[in-house]
Image (cartoon, rainbow, N blue to C red; front, side, top):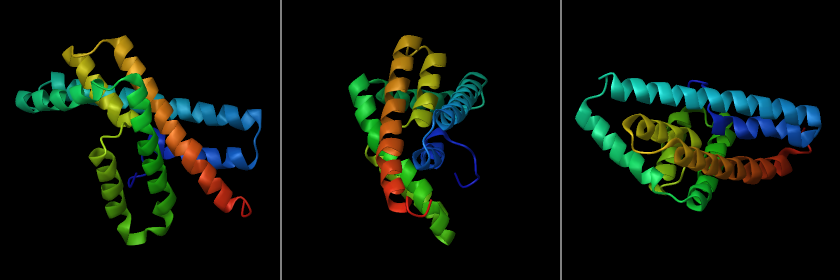
Length: 178
């Protein structure tokens, strides 16, 4: 976020505000295309990174084993819990995006604290979840249908929390200015 990398959950609020201001099928299509490209790039990026890191010897085996153990906790979620825990994660990531323009020198601290809250609550995040699921896939700890279900449930929760809750609140707050 600080490096202006395009994370999926970071793009939910920014992309939706113009859509809410002036709804049209064309804008909806543009937003969906942006979301699709960013999400796919994030998932491919996490898969390649975890596969190379864990399978090419870039990460010591004992560290990979610990990472798999952490990832396995994510995979223990039911689909409804992955969705429900995804709502606050989506909201918190959207809140980061919302406060960043006025944060000035506190940007790093804001990212650290908000992501710490996500970790503390054991909330599910689609990009972090895709890294965990990718690691489990390459290590044989999960099958593709289960990983896909968890990823989609988390994605839906992040969208509801980040877009549904936060974008509507933000839109209501600035609709007169748009």
